[in-house]
Amino acid sequence: MAWSFLPSWIDLESVSISFDLPARTVLRRTGIAALATSSATALRLTLAPALLRITFEPYLVIDLPPPLGDMGLQQVEYDFRSGAMTPNVFYTGGLVQVGKGSAEDEARAFMRGLVTSTPMAMPPYDPTSDPDLVVTVRQVLSNLEAGGSTAVRGARLSARLTLHQELAGGVGSDGFRIPAGATIAASVDIEGTRQEIETAPRVQRIEVDCSSAVLHKGGVDQADVRRFVVKRGGEIAVERIEPLGAARQAAGAESLVRLFSALVAGGGVALDPQRLGPSVVEGLVKEEIARALRPALVEWVQQNADVVVGMDLRQVLGIPAEGGAVA
Image (tube, rainbow, N blue to C red; front, side, top):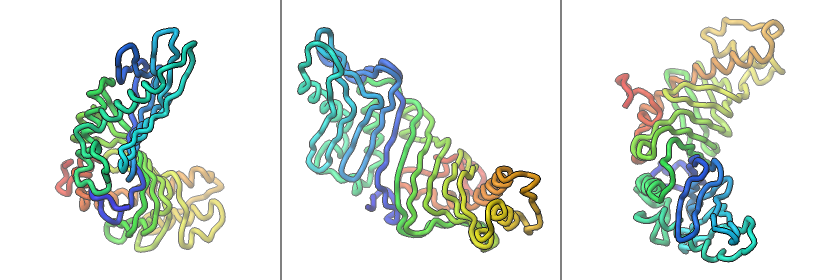
């Protein structure tokens, strides 16, 4: 499904952002009850076309004085179409187990507090057609911190998407292409306070699993890169590959030797897998692929810095503008 803040050829299935909350963080207090973490807890907000979900791992504790039984809150789901809010509340112990309905109402109030002052608060709402979705999400994060939780520092963004047209970049006869129909799962580590994440997020690391990302060198397809890591500044670490072309026809370490020879300048460097060992050969191949990919990635980011509405990818990824300085 197309989202208005992204190019139409990117189909975003869902996106989530996670934060770590310290033990004994109070998110909401009302009357005699407190909604709090019992230990270090991961808070995850998931946005999909029809819903917003907030999940806690481990569950939050709804702390009540004895003999009333405590309760747990695992998640709250908000249906954008109907406005229904569905909390998952359950008893965790205690002699007197009462008040579950009131606890569910408080969980709904917590979710309403998250979406207040945003278009999400007025169902039916369609995030895919929200032209200011980045601004909307920023307000949700602001509401989260204002609601009484500890100050957020650092986050992990996860997304699953499908490309409906080829994505390609290159420098000269070297480069990469991700074919139309490819699926991508990405996890992004972001540093900074909540305000910094809202206004100028700084990505430190992106882990990418891709159904196909083809490296071509010298105009020839050489390898299919299935898993790689992009670090701030555009440095790349390759983790999983499949040789293509002539190298694919060889068996075992020989395929990597052929691939390495095709990747290095002139193809004149020979490797002896008997002397170096298969793991060393594989490491050298991955380093050479990373070295070949980086210029093409940097070039693509520089030319498509505004692909996400409201963000400059050069600044987010710490990649210099074409003039040399970070945007």
